[in-house]
Amino acid sequence: MGTAELLLHTHDVLHGLGVTHWRGEDPAAALVLDRLFPHVPRSGPDAPWETLLAATGRAAFPGLPRRRTWRWYGDPVVGTGVVLCEISPSLARDLADGGTGGFTWTADGPPEGTRAAAALLLRARDRGAYRPGWGPYAIVRARDRRAVGRIGFHAAPDAEGRAETGCELVPSARGCGHATESLRALARWALAQPGARELCATADGADGPSRAALLRAGFEHRGAGRYVLRAAGR
Image 1 (spheres, rainbow, N blue to C red):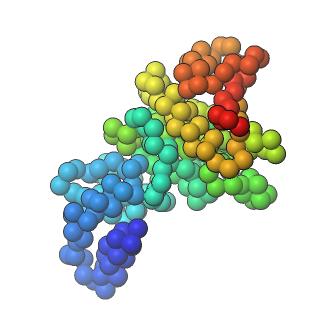
Image 2 (cartoon, one colour):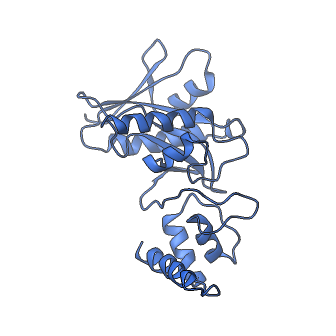
Image 3 (cartoon, rainbow, N blue to C red):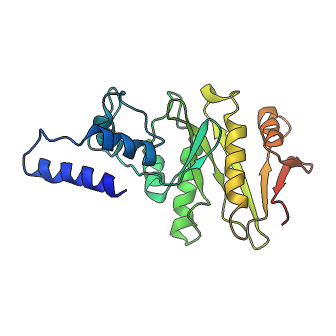
């Protein structure tokens, strides 16, 4: 993070003074990208500095609009083939207002349910019910760093340690195992948190793919479309 601050603010100060030819060192920029920006597509193997500027809204990726908002991720939730990046209130505001939330989405994203989840997060924050970590996450496909859906929680765990989760993918990313891997990764994170004992999910009888993903992720069917995963030993 210190390296990112040094590189980016040196760029900002020098550009403010009219020195526009300065560029950060590519090896340092590449290290920052690999450590803090797992959700950002790369402009090319020879352009880590240009990618870092685009990742932080200082430039635009080729063929894409300039980012209106951004953040880095020091400790994302990592699964097999996916990275889950928390949607913070500032990113939620951008999504709710029709933006990208700082992610590069596939052509058929973001889903409307993701925008709705962002609006719910903002309402929870306004009434003092928002807890970091217990809201929505963007599902980022690891192989190309494109956002393909949303997963997360309806709220923080209740007094009995129970939280409810849900998952949504864009149509082009369905049937590839991303929902299962996202559920597994998020469940590992959630059930390792203090006080969290049980995750619940709902999938109706007509939603075969969701039911299959929940079962593959280790949830048990408890009837009436309810699925439950309990923490071991709790």
